[in-house]
Length: 129
Image 1 (cartoon, rainbow, N blue to C red):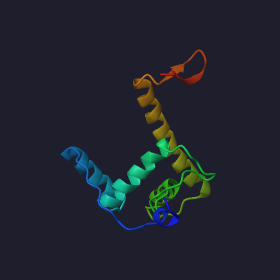
Image 2: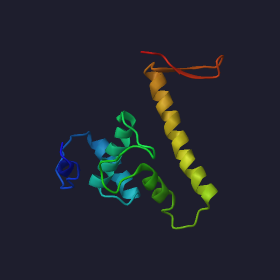
Image 3: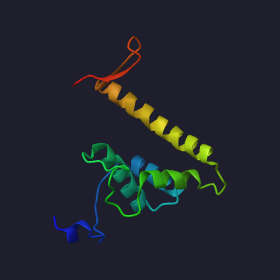
Image 4: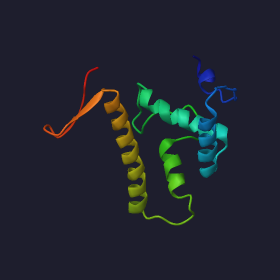
């Protein structure tokens, strides 16, 4: 791909079909975040892709959607109440979200038998499957 194609920011339509309950949940979540549904879906897809990207840059993953960054989004969501947060409060809030996501991911991987926890060994390991 040429450099010009890499920087092509023209908009293209993408269609998908999801169950009505999922669309409703996405609409509600987008509204809570003050985002359009398109912006919400685009952001969630980019956030999800980060787990599948083979190449990392020093500061994190490259994001093909201009203006969308996982940390940036988290900071803005944390500060959306319009109140001031100290550095420590902001870090704690962002880490809480990360810990929640980590726990959910570990539970999913254990349910898929891709990761297991051993109390004897005091930690998690990949099952190799």
